Length: 148
Length: 111
Image 1 (cartoon, rainbow over the protein chains, first blue to last red):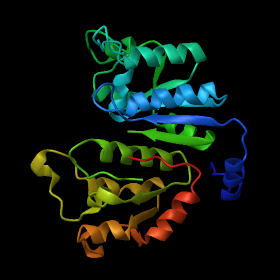
Image 2: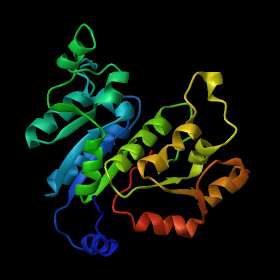
Image 3: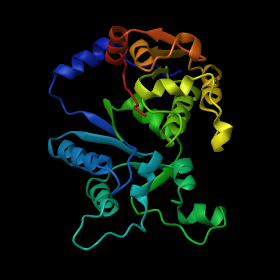
Image 4: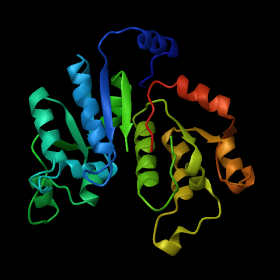
């Protein structure tokens, strides 16, 4: 049985300036809304300030940020590409919900084969896994920030 | 924390799935229905008419996954002219109690 730490501990950490370990829950897709771009900027700012990112968890429409097929105009930023670069640069743990991704056509090569589809499109740097990884992040990160 | 109406996008459904996963993994979990989210608990919803699964029926699975604290924001109900008899589950709490709940939670997932 996993128990949440006491509230008093939470209040104590809030007042200190020690580095925090953030988990980011990204629900927004690239392009359509600001959510994913805000999450990316938050992640960059947190890392630049000496904080840690425990995990990125892409869920709901956020799974589209992990698609390697997203193709943006040359004079516009590609969020999937920027996420991939940030993940590689800082060796971040990035998990994409496997069920939410499958519903939206974001598949690894392995999943594509298993489901009889022509090809996978999961970008490098991400891993497909279950909601258990979100639960784990909620329990072990200092803060979970939702972007969506 | 459920803030969106049951249909129109998948946030309600996928948020509920996340809550069920939290409960299934033994994390101490409570859910809060607030703002448009209170519509999710409406007893008289006929989602079959739009080929969707009934959100209130799915929410009734929460206790089976050990999520047995279901809170509903009183003010959100009032603003929408809903009464406790319109919803099928949950304990109604005041804004002050909502604030306290949020302040004492280790982490909050918002859908």
